[in-house]
Length: 218
Image (cartoon, rainbow, N blue to C red; front, side, top):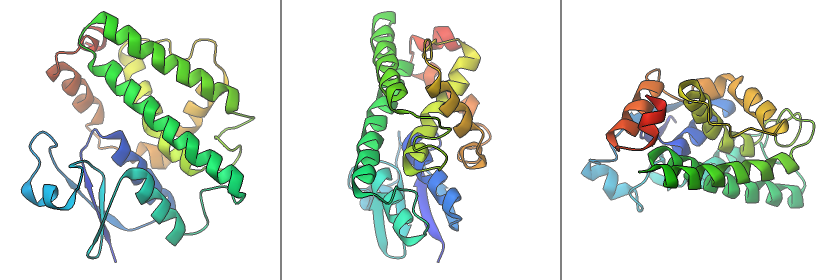
């Protein structure tokens, strides 16, 4: 049975699930929608009106963390640690990563320099907290790719794009986080998880919001 994923091309939370689907080797089709003008059929199946939505037969799943947990359970081997405490620890940092992605988004669409600096500071602070957790790498748990890595790869992909337009200095003083960034961007699942026009769409999205970042990212 081919799963159906409903997506918005710029959504980092959708990208988390695409990465997991690719890593698990799951057959799936993608339907792209415009979240600014969502179709009625989508609003009828998405309780929060958000993506991703995964349709498995007649059942609809929503929220990327829930979707990824489901995929991990039905397609072994698991991308979670076996130890229950370590697994819970990973889940907690996935949630922390979600907050970091929101900070990154708020930074990108900030209306003025003060707001931009506020969210930039929040991003830098959270990245520094990840720095204290990471070991020898290259991934969150060491040598093994996990759901934490799938959850944070969209963040690093966006930093890769944004830094290509304007240096953000979010990695100043860090060594392990940049290495994690490089490892995740080196995986084919990360590269394949966005459309080929992603960079252009992201730039246009920032411009359309009249964001301060449009001055930086050109």
